Length: 103
Image (cartoon, rainbow, N blue to C red; front, side, top):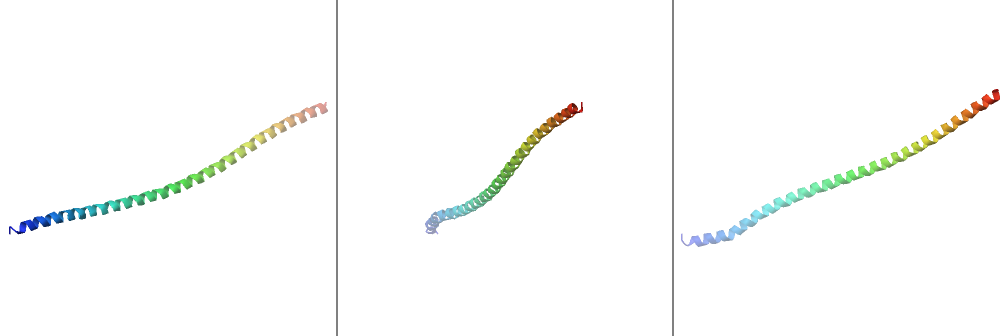
């Protein structure tokens, strides 16, 4: 029995690092799977960001188009006001001419 103790101690000394390596491998595999899951989440977020960037681009284009139309309509309103003012002046002249001719 005394002769077996050195052999048992030798086996423990040899197998202990192997057990540690096995434990580290399991831990490394778990870390690898966590890293892979995080990489997938990052990829999903990148795709989501790209989609949002595309929507922002579309909204900006729509806003530019609406803004352009607004300024066009505003320009038309200014032009129409000037025409109405000119017509008012023409009406006053015609009314004045009518009065002058009527006398």
